[in-house]
Length: 153
Length: 153
Image 1: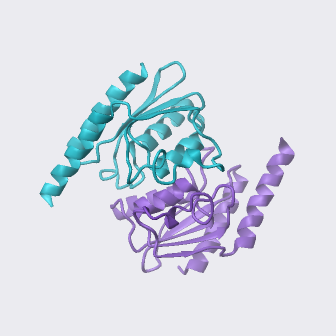
Image 2: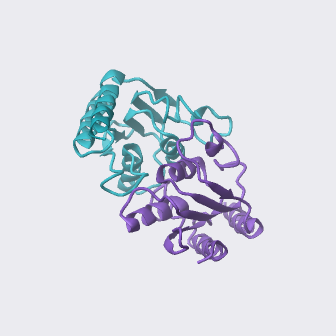
């Protein structure tokens, strides 16, 4: 699967999340050959787990699949800029590439907030980060979700 | 259980982690009445999960136990300063208090590195943070573990 196809899949997973009342974020982990190791969407509410972000679930699933706690050579494709928790997890799992969709000025931890990979003490940073991939669609999903949520309140 | 007793328990869990070849960190989550909701030690290697830090496992377990993704009113007691991943998870789970043992100048995210709770954009910070509790013992466990590891290499 190409990274473009992986982003298409991640957007579909985000859409599924929204339909289930979860913040619409989807993630796919590819290995160095472009094979899908894992895919996940947000499950915070139905798992009763505030850490059940799409990318953390996908990384955990991919590592379990590989039988190793490290994902060197792998690519994470996710529809939203990872938060500081997920960015730090990317460091722990040692992902090689991160490709993400919408920017998250309030909650992001890669290009906003603590910018964890840019810190001098960062123990591992992905060799490549590509941001803003299909940003418009990923952002539109999120805005639509929160608009509906506000109307309900 | 008092927080002192919880730290004693967390130190025992860290000791168990070391015996199993895991970085010695232990964690306990108490509710507002001091009842134990969850306790965990590091499981990175045996779970093949780089995110299986003691405090993240304990928070997930506590939230599952409570049937809610949020842990308002709860206290996290952990033997080591939480890393940025776990500090950001503390924000997501909305813990009210954090009590930790040894400082982690290289890997910590609370009083070192990105100091996530001190950032102006932090979406939730615990009302109380007590650091350095039984620091000497918690630090000694970690130093002993890494000394043995280096001797093996």
